[in-house]
Image (cartoon, rainbow, N blue to C red; front, side):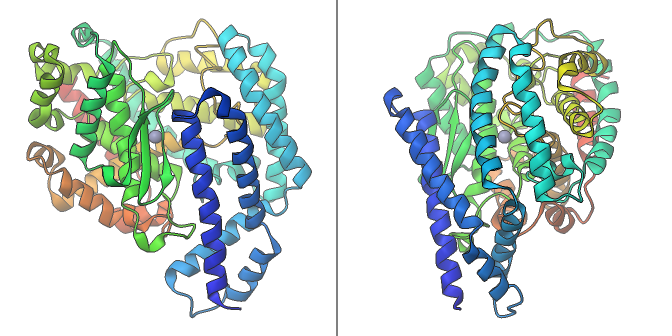
Length: 494
Ligand code: ZN
């Protein structure tokens, strides 16, 4: 068999995925209301087609033929390895079970939305219980030797066990909880001056300016509006980002855009040599989040980031001319325990994630029952953040991840912070301090460093390989803790 056949096969799968991604983007941004049903039907047809291709006998043949073929180049070897992994993980899931699960989660998402609106966990409980059962069943088909939660983690972070994550998060907690505690005794910065009436077209203008400033390429992407910000597309030449506009508070758009810009820059800088292979994507969720969070927090919430461009903010929104940069900087870095994860600050955000990780882990070991989730949620909120939600809407019902079956996804966010801390520390050693680079407006040096060390490899390297090659170490919590301690002791005079 010729290797060209394998190339063509992968290329066709990429084309199907490309179409699915575009339609999903359209659904969330531009599609007219009455187009929704036909769009969903088309998405489902094409994704089923792509899924069938990934578990076909043809793929089995490719694996058998080429697995030990030394003549394959590195890209083809790794692509085949990736095809094999998907094949092995999916081939044993009975079609009936897979279909039942997909339609159950689709329904469960709708029930969850309603339950969240009505603060009614009980109506959602049976659906969630069933999702847990389905996931246990599927995990047993994927790999019966591994514990269930580890199989699910493997969907998002290959090779990281729950024990390992648990240890990392214990360390993270040890660093963060005392910091949050000391900050809580300090006077809160008054950020009310930052609220106002910010017109949408102006927010868009500023967003585009900032995206360009950090190195996002509009020839390979675009910015649109959506309910929840996201990044999607086909790397590297079509990577689109979205944002939302809050009329009163410009911060949500600004930092949402920088966050998605970080995801976008990652995908736009994947090597073109990986096009039409399964490797032309970010390697995993954790590394993806490391890039978005590095841009959003480590760069975007640094005063030096804003120094050279703050006058531009004042140009677009003259009301900012009266707000001193120092106040703006303090306001974007307020740390305070809050109920909602997506609104949390850089520091307490980690605690929201750790809480979810611990709860979902316990759900799958059997230490926690779904019916006891709301109470367990309140207890952990009290323990880690010192506050308790009055409703389940602001508690256990706030996120969509469990309703759509994405158990094992949450840890990626905090792992992203840990990886981001390591990358930032290494970058500083190699090309100069972030303070200096930002002050001199050398965002290009930062982007080049990230591209050379991380982006261009796409999925050629796993997260562990990237960390090892770039930072010459294993996953390490220390750099991000050091960063938090330095930054917040200065900001809050601790
Ligand atoms: Zn993100």
